[in-house]
Image (tube, rainbow, N blue to C red; front, side, top):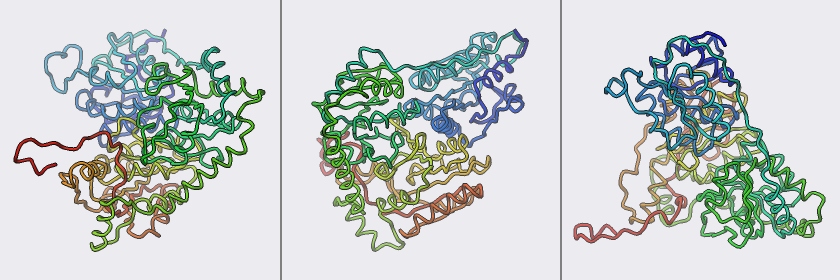
Length: 587
């Protein structure tokens, strides 16, 4: 055992886990440890707001597979992180939230920046480690880092600030990593028999495929079956878009080809997917989920098996290992679906071609409100672009190895149809927590982890303003990114509900904006305003060149019409009923 201070034990344990970057704002609560970050090879990336730090840690971990680490001053610096950790929880990101707290002799006295920090995060972390004795500093620190990977989600390390001081005799624990297996033989054998007898198997490639680095395993299984592969909702990077069996994403504003093909399935392999509600709800008026199909669900978390959808077989295992095990069982067999492989390939190609043709012709929304807005804006000063045309132009100009983050909002939701990727760990969305202000800080964290890849954030004007000051962080730390802001001067996703349910009575959803390109320039970035369709692709190409070859962050502001795509779900609200006379017209 080695004599060291508790700050040294804390920092040495993080170094043993490979930590090189921490996101946060410096503070007195952990200053003694912070003082020795640099000689330990650790950089503290100072941010504008701690929520941004949490999102950066999330993006960092999702593209690298390493821990994302965030820290802040006790009290308000910690409470500012809650939303970001909730988003990381639903992304299954191995983020470690370090929460220095009020010293032990001041707790309960209502002192400066005192807060009970463990309850803040208990719903959104997989494990909470509270250092209850200085001699356990390294033990709890290491356990939080181990659990973030083993439990597939954020953990919290809570440390009374006075415990950063004092001497201990200690050994630094070494990291422990789980060697995840394919699942049990009985369930694998049962699933293999179902696949042997399947006539029209379909694979859903989920986030677990990305986290397990199992895209090649998914491809091998799909090719043996001749099975179409659909991406689970917001995991468009879980299968390469250039592959003949790729059919696009399910879920909100997903691929009609994917929906058509899965509706025909008699066996579905949900590979590394929890089959979340948003990823299986009807879309475009199509109720596509194959209720009579046999469902084989594979997930590393046994609690997800059969939680949302009724399943036939549940396999608790690693997505890659399970895919390998299933392939080994069926590879030499004669499968029922072998006889129809060529015919199914033609069917896949036809459905995909039909969807691409529809997207090419779908240049604007066609509902009554959108058509009214298009007509109304044609008489306004300036030029306004149709979001779907903009998204197609961005898709065509997108670098092959780009990382893209998206925010919450109407145009960002529509982007689900146009975001295609060739490699995993490329697509970052706020997942089920659905918080605005996610895209920019998350892509900054991704850029920090993988500086050799283009990093692009999509955001609507409402969501952009929540975190746009993190442009300063990107500029300060030379982590150049490209922000694409769709300026349609409204909170579009919620406004769509006012169109559909509240008779176009608009309350608090119109936005009067200043120039986001101009604000970007004021923060040290480049700024480009686009109001001509032919300028969209070149603007992205220029911004990526500035990012990759000149170290410049760029804000691209695209002036869009106020048309609105379909809402998230039509069963989320009901038609209003009023009983009081003064509200009788508000129906």
